Length: 340
Length: 42
Image (tube, rainbow over all chains, first blue to last red; front, side, top):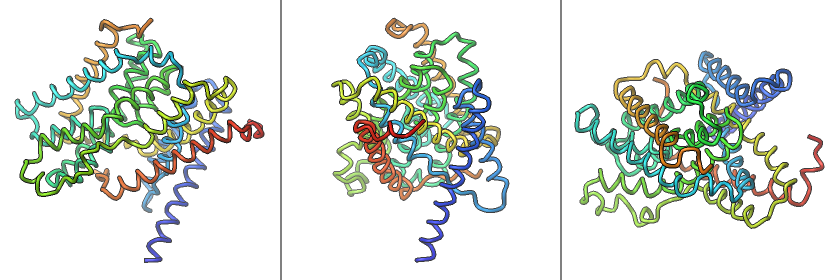
C-alpha cells in the first residue's frame, strides 16, 4: 500500500516537474519571439512534449494542469464588469438554448436514421451540449450500460472535437471576418470542454477569452440538470426506484469553479477591485491559463483525429453541423454584432 | 486507441482538485488585495 502511494506521489511530482520545465521553455520562446501569441507557444510546446511522451517507452506522466485552469477561471471573475452582461445577456442565454436544440435535434435525427444507437447519441449530445467530459463521467456513474466503450467513445469525441476547434477556429475566424467578441462567444458555446474552449478563445484578442469564460460558466451551471435529463430519458423508472439514483442527485451539482467565479464576479461588480487590482489579477490569470494551456496541448492527441472510428466520425460530423448553425445564428441572427 | 474513459475515482479527484484550485485562486486574490503580490517584481 505504501509503495503504491509513494509511486503515485513520485508520478505526481514528475508531472509537476515536466509541466514546470515545458512552461519555462514556452515562456522563454515567447520572450524571445513575442510576435507569436503566448497561447500558440504554450500549446505548441505542450503538444510537442505530449508527442514525445507518447513515443517514449515509459508511462507518460499526467500533467496537473486542471489546478491552474480552475484557479484561472475563478480569478477571471475579478474582470467581471457590467459590460459582460450586455455582451452575453439574454441573447447569450438564448444562444445557449439554441445550441442545445441544435445538438439534441441533430442527434435525435441520427438515431431516427439509425446512424447511432440511442444511448450513445444521448451521451454524445450531453457531452457536446457544452458540458464536456465531466458530464459523461457523471452519467456513467449511474448508467451501467454506457460504462466502457460508449463512455470512451464519447470522451474521445469531446476531446477530438476540442482539438479540431483549437486548430480550426483560429483559421476560420479571419475567413469569416469574426470580431473578438463573436469569436469568444462561438468558442464558449461550441467547444465542449472548458480547457479547449478557453484555449481556442485565447488565440483571439480580448474580450474573446472573457466571453468564452462567461459562456462556459453559464453552460456549466446547467450541468447537473443536463445529467438529470439524460438519466430520466435513458434509465428505466424501475431501475431509478431501486435506489440507483439517490436523493442526492435531485440536487443538481454545480461545478465548484462556477461558484468561485460567481462569488468573485459578484464582488467585482460590487466594486471590490480597483483598476490596479484588476490589472495584477489579469497578469496572474494569464499566467494560470498559460500553464494550463501547456497541459492542454500535452493532452491533445493529434493522432487520434485521424483514427476516429465510425461513431466518433458521425459525432464529429454532427458537431460540425451544429457549430455551423450556431455560427450562422451569431453572425446573421437578430443579435449579431453582440449588442453593438 | 490510447484514450481511456475517466472513471468515477477520476471525477471525485477532479472535484477535490477543483476545491483546492478555488482556494488557491481566493488566496491569490486576497494576496493582491492586501498588496503582497505587488512586492514581486514582474
